[in-house]
Image (cartoon, rainbow, N blue to C red; front, side, top):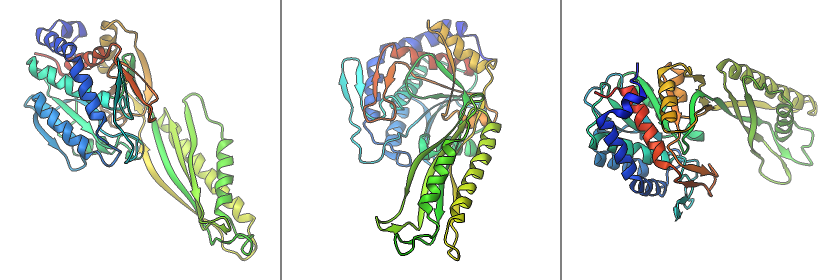
Length: 396
C-alpha cells in the first residue's frame, strides 16, 4: 500500500523537494523551451534523447543509459526490483524539417510540441532533481525514463521495448504527458491501425475501362465504413484518416490505399470492431470485382496492420489511482478520471498499475504547429508528480 498523501506532504525531505520545484519554476520553463527546440519526430529522437541523458546526469541520477531503441533511463536508489517508473515520451508528431523554435510572450510559450511533450520531459527532470537534492530516500527504487515512439506511427515502441527488456516488473508506472492538473488517465484507449491496399491490373483510363478499379474499391470501402454504427458505450470509433494511389490523370491505378484508425475503450469491443471492419473491406473488394469486364483479373486486398495499442484500465480503487486523486485534491483541485492513449497503455494491458498525468499549466493547439503552453500553476503539476511518485515508492 502507498503511504497517505498527507504523510508524504508532511515528510521533511519531501517538503524540501516541493520547495525546490517551486523555486525552480523558471529553470523548468527554460528546460522545457530548450527541449522543445530540439527536433524529435517519432523514429528520430536521438538528439533530444542525448540531451535528456545529460540532464539526468546533471540532476544526479545514477546509471544513466540509452538503450538500443533510444529510451533514456536514470535511477534513484540502488535496488532494481519493483521500481516505481516515472516516464515521459521524447517524440513529437511533427515531421523532420519543421521549424520547432520556441517563442515566449509573458507566461506563454509557443512552438510545435511545447506542451506534448516538452512539458512532460521538463517536469520529469525537475522531479528527479528535487528528489536527489533534497535527499529523499525511498523503500522502492524510482526509475526515470524518457521513451521513444509514443506518438502516431511510433506505436508505443519505446515503452513496449521497456517492458520486453526491462529490469524487473514495475510496482507502478506513471507517465507525464502534456499539460494540466486535473486529469488522471487510468483507462487505456486501445487502437488498431491499418494500411488497406487494393491492387489490380490498372491500365489506360479509356482503353482499359472496365477492369476492376482499386480507386473505386477504396471509395466503396470508405462509404461502407462511414455508414457503420459506432457504439457509445463502450465508446468506439472507426476513421479513414488518409487516402492515396494512382500515377496519372489518364490511368486506372494499379493500386489505391486508405489508412484506418480503429479505437475503443474496451478490448473486446476493439476486437469485434476489427472483425466488422475487415468484413466491410472484403465486401468492397467483392462489389468492385463484380463490376469488372468478364475475363479481366480481379482486384486483390492487402491488409497490413501498422499500429496496435492495447486497452484496459487501472481500477479506480487501486492505490495508485487513489494516490493521484488524493494528491490532486491536496493541491486544491478537483480530479477528472479519463481515458486516453498514452505510454500507460502498455503496462495497463500487462497488468501493471499505471496512470498518465499532466504536468501542470494550460495548453492548446495540440499536434499543430501553433501549439502553446501557459505556465498557470505550472509548478503544481510537477509537485503532483512528486507526491504520487513518493507515495508509491514509500519515503523512508
